[in-house]
Length: 218
Image (tube, rainbow, N blue to C red):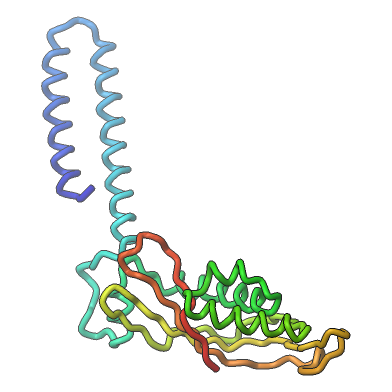
């Protein structure tokens, strides 16, 4: 509901109340007049609440606000602003959750989780690595320590597809064991500082909030 609609509704309420008061004024029952005033007050409260809700929804939908200075935005900021319903802070927080979840699932060979978080092409590559590990009897173990950095580095919108590159700097412990449970790669006591560039993508016409991981590189 826009504020013009709110004003029109307010005018209608005032007109209806005036007519109602005129009719009730010809009757001796004062209680009905008070009851009508209470009803009008409730209608006003409902309209105001709807107006506030509409204003909140307008912000959530990412509609252009009159005070936004587009001229002083960087190219990256303009691209991000052009993506419907995009919230930078929310995207970074969600991408960090996805990073940890994907990292853990890949180490554990959890293809079901990966299938839900990767685009088909990248999922195929991840699954090939997992299948090869199983074939050779190798076991990967990853202990995620935490994030040192998570920053959007680039963004592109081509036709209906939006892609965002985000740089992750994390601390991890990674080891690889053979079938005899012997460590053949890595050190369980060594914390690695690893930098990754991950690219997430989403169809901007989609009503869903999900971004899928499309590529990874060091």
